[in-house]
Length: 258
Ligand code: 13P
Image 1: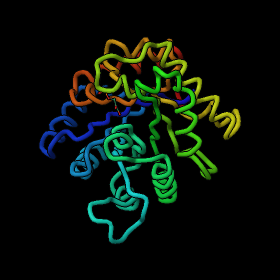
Image 2: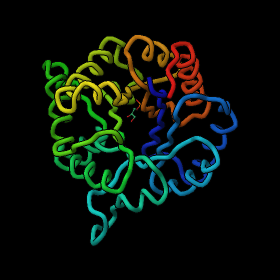
Image 3: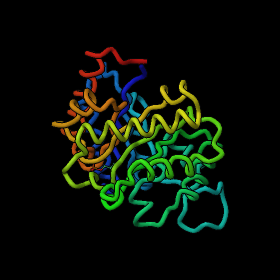
Image 4: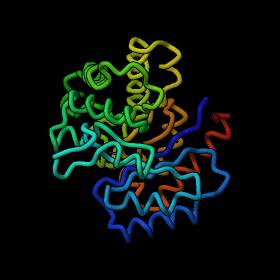
């Protein structure tokens, strides 16, 4: 088994100064022997500062979005090359970008292609809305998002999938371990159809949606996730470090490591 991964998606939070305080607080509390991959995804404005602060430790850094062109007249956009200068990861296809900013699977696919070409590691988010869930469309939506977002992408070694049911994001109500497990299994079986068993088994699948220090252990134990994409709880050093520590203890107990 590979290392568990805990990523903090700060979304549109933290000035550069607040970002610095948060990183320092996380570093102070994080044990040096931790066997969990930790990624911080601040807004673009703090990327450089967070990258600088973490460059001597094992914390990795990611952007929250990327544009699909490498350069040119695209006011306000940031290219894969610019991100690659500062960090290794990028989140693509988060539901807030899909639903608030109109990102389609086609756009997500173009972004993945552009990011892969520049050697970035990608966290691809998929997940159904409450309405889709209530209409029994969860599996169909996940299939549509995965197949279209990964269309013509031959290799997915650099891609981690995050299952983020929209109804669980920022609500304080995480998916049940059963719902989470079902989502993870659906994703793995679609990856298997697309890329074969070996790739499906070795691809990391995270869960995101109201993860906190109280529910992380059960999610790891019962839902078979490879880690979490944490929103609200990643904005507080104590809760974020606690999620990492609990993941570390879980990984030591079960023997997951590189
Ligand atoms: P919350 O942890 O705040 O529910 O957000 C999850 C998320 O959207 C991470 O990308």
